[in-house]
Length: 348
Image (cartoon, rainbow, N blue to C red; front, top):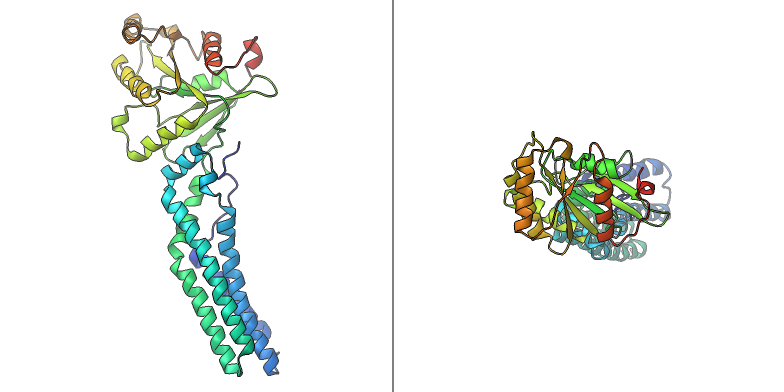
């Protein structure tokens, strides 16, 4: 499933629409100079002026209203990300207001085009045309903030990477520098897609594991989201974390118990406890990375903690060297209810 925002069209700003109206309006006038030799032609020009303004404004607003996804039909994962980035209520209000503006503009146009056509005198036709154009442009101006809001924010939605929330997913979590990206690259495609998370300053690494022609598993590293205590996060980051709940996945939490680990085991345990508390409905697999450089005292602390919390034994791996990866994948695939007889076939 591609992101519903991936192919959204560019939204013009209010001033761009106004400029388009005035430019085309001017060309219409210049093209008609010297050709108006009768009252009939003059009236037709008034009709064309009103029609031009109506058509341009409605065409631009229709592009917005009918090309944007109906937010209540978007998958909850992507709906939550929209809420994180630009606000669900603001987005919905903008689209609804512009849809209403279309109806108002069509009504104004219908009323004034009839008046222009039936006006007894040319000056009356001209007056009705001016009134109609003025009212249409006034409606456009009243909706300026909704147009500009969407124009400014749709590019942010388009930057959301395409993650299929229905596909089995391995969500790799852990503090910075524990080897999350290395693990994603080890277990998935040789060159995972690297895409920006629009609500963090870091990049998402997304890879795929092909089990067979039918089953593909996603593997993602979520930098900036599941790598530090929740109390340190702002509301936007917390909402983004909640969006991950909608993924059909298993969380693999990585400890770094190496001699040169950047964070203490206590700090890493704190983040794990936050994840265990926030994602109670998900399977969480705990692994100790960089086992080829392990500090036995740090490993002992992890073992004692997991035994105390009845979390079982962690899987010992080295994402860099490929140690313990087959065991990790067997456990993860089992929790995803995917049967794989030969793990070698799943590797890139």
